[in-house]
Image (tube, rainbow, N blue to C red; front, side):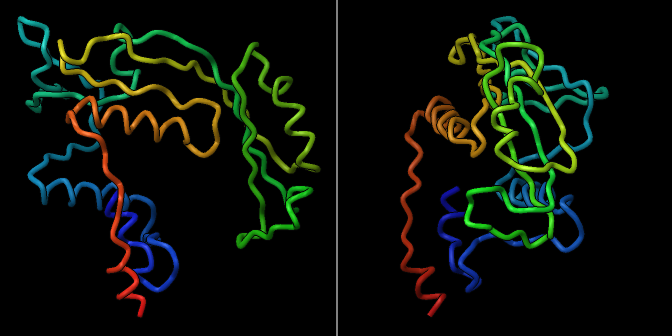
Length: 209
């Protein structure tokens, strides 16, 4: 993340984003290569992963298709450890596709010609269309809409005892605000350090000049 921030203005475009030429599959490849540079092992297309523990209950590896990758810590989402999490809520989410700007947004334009809007909330029922209707009504005419609903979990284990670091699920925020906070907290929990994202933008400014 710090490298991301320091990459601002490197390509004189005002953004560190680099769009892949051959599809989004290039993005995990980039992370795989970066992982290899720092001595990491990247395993892709693995199914039915099983976390292995020693006699003391500490994680020692992850097994899939007969192969075990040894490790000292596991970082994962709640789906890997149903016995180490608890349900704390439910999220209802809608993705709407339109051919017009969203009303009251100063006619903000779309490069693709279509407009996509996200509407989400902490659900209280099993009827996302009804719960999200007040927000959807603000969008104007919608060409197509997709609904999703999922349970939200948070970890209840003690990572210092089993070395399993479990994230929370995405909540109803649309810009990953709470997810970023969760990442910060997990980083501190895993490393014992506070994540420092302060950057020196002088290098980027020099590159822009």
